[in-house]
Amino acid sequence: MIVSEIMTSNPIAVQPKTTVADAARMMLANHVSGLPVLDENGALVGMVTKGDLLRRAEIGTEGEQAGWLKALLQPASVAADYVVTHSRHVSGVMTHNPVFVTPGTTVAEVAHLMLRKRIKRLPVVQDGRLLGVVSRTDLLKALAAKLVQTPVETSDDEILKFIKSEIEKANWAPKAGLRVAVKDKVVTLEGTIFSDDERRGVITIAENAPGVKEVKDELEFVDPASGLAFPPTS
Image (cartoon, rainbow, N blue to C red; front, side, top):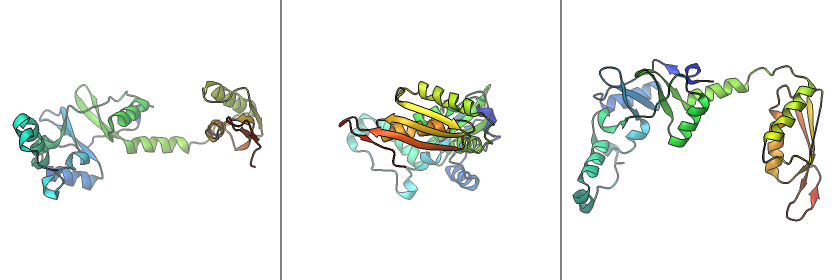
């Protein structure tokens, strides 16, 4: 899946000269956490988000004033902080040169960027023009659609093959001590596991096999420290 399939097209945008008050009102009215900032030629030059407005003098959240020593040694830094907390225009508070993606960027890459950069919205740009915005909400909508898809029709053999393949690929899974059986699309798991996390992991693999109706947990837990075995609880 790629960005063009899930992005919001023709997003609301502001300009550097837009007032902070107007930008805040637009975010609230449109239920968005950020807005792209475009110059007079329509090129993306920044992003302004709710996070950019957390430190403001008007609500007493600008933080403590810099001491005289920092003001003396780093006057430019102190001045920049003052602009962020007092500027009346988007140009003073926006994030310059924002991270962006293209319509062909994969959803996996988008999720990785959002997690690594700790951002919620990414502008979608192609040939220097803003085409849309992709947000965490868009990713959630895509996930929800996938989760409710109609299960494909599969045979017991195909289900068994899928589960065995996924277990083989999982480097955490205890390979030798597991037995998997499938009958009428009901999976039975037997054998030995060495932690509750392994149990949940193997069950999750079985639950994700296309066409599975039910998973029966008959796995036996063996405590690695003591060697004691505990039979299935159900």
